[in-house]
Image (cartoon, rainbow, N blue to C red; front, top):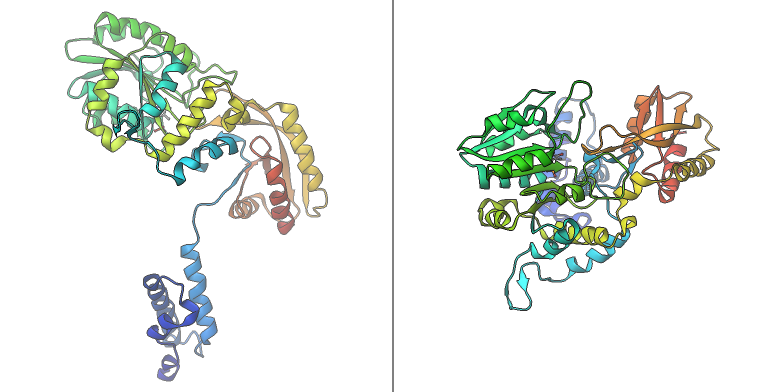
Length: 447
Ligand SMILES: *Cc1c(COP(=O)(O)O)cnc(C)c1O
């Protein structure tokens, strides 16, 4: 046995070997040690009777090394029909937005540099005017995401003070972001009013005292209530706040501007009410990068900018560049540049045609049964919970493989599908012609 162990290559020789000359030495050493240790254990436990050959050991090290150094991020085909899949990265970008943004990343830029004065500028100036033009508002500020916007606003204006909110709006957004917790974390006292299903204006009115600094309305975003339900319109909340000289703040969340026919409150309509503060996400219905967009009254935005917390919550330059281009697309009414809008607006005939074209490519599969069925896509990302977007899917079944194991195999090949009624559904909404060949290959391999 000692003999077998002595035949193992020495760590130092592995590290010096030409096969590994391009390898990171620290990682290589770590992996080589693990591999050798594993073999030593097997020899001692007598689960192997001979020492593996050097090539086998090297190949094992190489495999482990590549596993660790291959980027874990990978592109996926979204066949779920959910346009804003938070787990799949929410919004995607069009080639035109990427094309316009890229040169700013490979060169220095004026992120915080005032070219006229030749001195330090503000990163927010790049989008402020565009946001003000879109919403006809006084001022704007952008931060890392909408959760950060909520924190910044509450912390700036309501620390050790009271914020009034309806019990019907104490929402939880995916990833355990809960409005009540965020408000407490921001140092404010939460005053809940009304009942889960019904809140009246007088509930807000009765809660206002000297400690109240803000009436907060939170868009329900990811759920809806039906039946015996009543909520107070933001317009009335705004008027009440104004009468008491306190702040009205509407956290709209999904941030719908225009381009989709839906019953979501449009930010343009909300902006017409001249609210104190509004915030929304950059990567939900807006279809841009992760960001929290805040607009409203100048004197309040100025105060937000003075809060030191802003430094920790600030938006990074990459997101800011993509946000600028996305907002410009809205300003120019060039909505075809926003994939989120284009995907949600797709004509049903176009989706059906894609389904037929893909089905044609799959006609030689032997063990799969394939058929086109009508289905319903969703907006997702905590947006438009009630809206169903008619769509078409290719329903798949395999003669021998069950749908569960099949869906895992598809997933590992980068095709994310839905299971319904013991069938795999490939919803064509977020699939385009460029994905067809890959889908065909994946299915032929599994046939
Ligand atoms: C999504 C959402 C948030 C959080 O926004 P992120 O951009 O994901 O941080 C906050 N409030 C509401 C109402 C939301 O819908």
